[in-house]
Image (tube, rainbow, N blue to C red; front, side):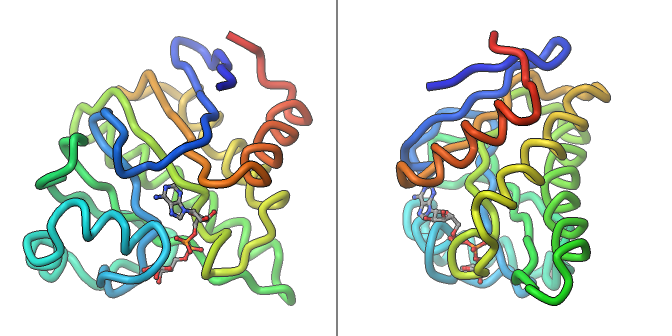
Length: 183
Ligand code: AR6
C-alpha cells in the first residue's frame, strides 16, 4: 500500500476489492441510468443486494456523465454508495474525456462532504468497460482527488482500490509524476 499526505488528508493506493472496504462510502463506476451493469458495478450491486439498491437508484436516475448520486450501502460494510458516472473514452476528444472523468471524482467528493463523510474508496473509474487508458486516467483521477482534498471538505481519507497489478502500477507512477508527498 502507498500513502500520501495532502493537507490534513491521506490518499492511499491499494490493490483489492472495493466491495469489502470498511469506509463511509465506496464509489461505484456507474452508468447514466444507475442500472446494474458489469465490472465493479455488478459486483457492488450483488454484494449490496441488487433489488434494494436498484430500487434506491431508480428515482435518482438519470445521472449525467461527470455527476454523482448517493444511496445507502445496504448489505455492504460501507454505509453509503456514491454512484459516479465516468465517460466512455473518446480517442478523438481526450481533453473532453479528462474533464468529465475529473468531474466524476470531484462530484463524488463534493457529495461526500455534503453528507459529512470522512472516508471514501474509489475504483479506477472508466478504465474497464468504458475504455479509458489507465495511465491517462490515473493522472486525471489523482489530480482531481488531490485538488478536491486540498480544497478542504469533510473527507480525510481517499483510498483508490485497484483490482489488478497493472492499474496499481499506473496509479503509483502517476502519483510519483505528480510529486505527491509520501505520508
Ligand atoms: N473492486 C475494485 N475494482 C474493480 C472491481 C472490484 N470488485 N471489479 C472490477 N474492477 P468497470 P467503467 C476494476 O468496467 O470502465 C458497468 O457496466 C476494473 O478492473 O467496472 O467505468 C457500469 O454499469 C477496472 O480497472 O467500470 C457502466 O455501464 C475498473 O474497476 C460501465 O460498466 C473499472 O472498470 C462502467 O465502466
